[in-house]
Structure formats: C-alpha cells, structure tokens
Image (cartoon, rainbow, N blue to C red; front, side, top):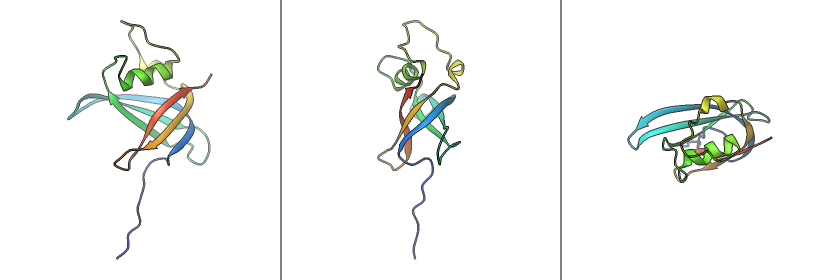
Length: 112
C-alpha cells in the first residue's frame, strides 16, 4: 500500500504579502492572536499564511515583534494598538517549517 505525503499551506520561502487580519481566541495555552498575511504575487498569490502568538503585548513577546514590524516602529509604553488599522500593510513574509512539519510565518518586514 502506498501513500503520498500531503502538505497544506504555502511552501517554505519568502513572499511579498500584506497583513490582512488579526483574530483573538483562547486555547489551552491562554489568550492568543492569529495574524494572517495574504501572498500578493507569484504562484501562491491569494494564499493566506498565519502566525499564532500570545495575546500579551510586552517587549519580549511575539505579538510585540510582529506589531513593531507591521507598524514600522516600536510601540510606546501605554500606547493602545489597533491592529485593524494596520490591515493592508505591505511587506515581505518569511515562511518556515516547524518541528511538527507545519508551516508558519516566521517574520514580516514592512515595505515602504
């Protein structure tokens, strides 16, 4: 009996993309945010790639790192951040494979 390994999502690599959604949810690890990016060019144009981060916005958190990259600046202490106001921000994403074989957005670099 033979099987073919199936993969979902965009292959590992770098892609021009735009930030399109932030969705809050809770799981076994606590409050989290799913950040979604849409590939804007090439073979995978229109595909969505995501990254799940803790909902904590502290200087050492993944959410802080992505907010800083999307906003193009460091958030100020006490500042209220509206991720919806950043939808459409263009940049470059790097998609990498996790130890479990899934793919996720590892980083975002704002363009312009």
